[in-house]
Amino acid sequence: MLDANDEQIDRKFRGKYAPLKPAYETLRDYLLGLGEDVSYYIKTIYIGFEINSQVFVVVYFTDKGLEVGIRIDPPVLKEPFHDAKNLRWPGITSAFYLRDPEDLTAPIRKHLRHTLEIARAEAT
Image 1 (spheres, rainbow, N blue to C red):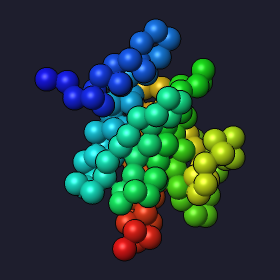
Image 2: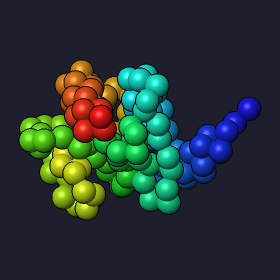
Image 3: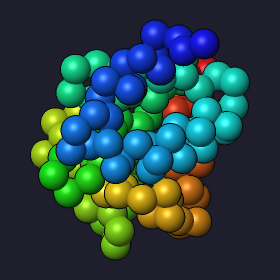
């Protein structure tokens, strides 16, 4: 049975964004697998991942793929990361594009874990 989030995700990944759904699901499953305290919510133009109401990852739909913004200090700007100022999200400093599940490489996973550790520390 689909929950409300599943139904919203299915609507978001229709049309030109349909090919990005496997990449998103890989990212979502990875982030949710980092702990029971990680949750997500879906808005009109983005998907947010949070811990204790602190957003640490945002996902936007773009023509280049999913743009995944992470909250990390200092910013990571070495490939595949880039500056996330265009996302205009407080604290989100770096981003990367995700097109395929294989794009979620070990270095990206490392930075995602580090981002979560920072958010956990700030939430306590």
